[in-house]
Length: 408
Image 1 (spheres, rainbow, N blue to C red):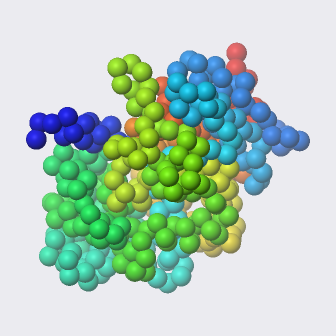
Image 2: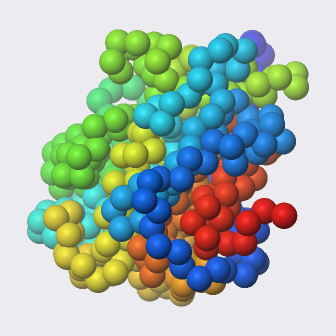
């Protein structure tokens, strides 16, 4: 069209690609020598003083971090402002967009439905979506035998899509109807394209793979992913702050200005983006791949459940065997179902981690099950400095807990 609107839409598609760079997260923590594990503090460490120079160094609007040990908050901090140019400080209870860190939530939802007998890990796209008249003719035969587990492990054959396909993205943006209808239409678009590799043969990080997985869960239940994730994940964990898309919308407590805003860098200046604005988040159909926001305290509840599960415990959310499946590196690719896997000395062994950004926010999460520890950091921008700032916030928390040497 050549209009300003079409130009901004193309920029949005580039800017709002989900990312995964877990290998780069906390580089300092990965190489530093650990200290012996310290006992939990009598009161949580206040990390605001440690966060302040990080915010100044990377020119972040705000930065927040939380550490959970044994189900208790042992360190936290939140400094900066909700909107650049406004004197409205962030708080410990604010809501933050966590991007692709929500992928493990979609995988955890799948585990809940598998335990309930509603779907199987080896349920195939053909079995599930081939039953839908509107999809049957769109699904290429190559995808018929792709399983739910392969989709969640990024081994479906779908192409890597952290940079949106310019021929596909406008079609996704234009979708209308209920969320179930939009996800079915998205699945039809994605599964009508030739695979980038033989399904099951290799890992390729695919946001649309998680949309297809969510579509299969919606087909099995008749309920939209948003309702399923609330019913099977948020409510059992006592998570009350979670929502979808950018936080602070008009339907959220009725206070439009009560939450942080994501920021876009324009002409060298970070500009807050209102939740209702075009480009405040990816299209709603992509929420299963990374469209959740919530408070750090609520996110910590979720993290604590995964830590307990990895330690071999049956939990109110899932049985030990289900946690084992979620966290297993079945394909030997250093990635399980929604989690990157690795080893860190400070963690005493295995770590599960992820990062997430829609271009306007950045979030990172690290689980250290052997330490019974989870650490999460967030900022309300997603450009240069955001990822490093979150990494440094995680390091600051680990230093406060005596798991890494203090800063020099």
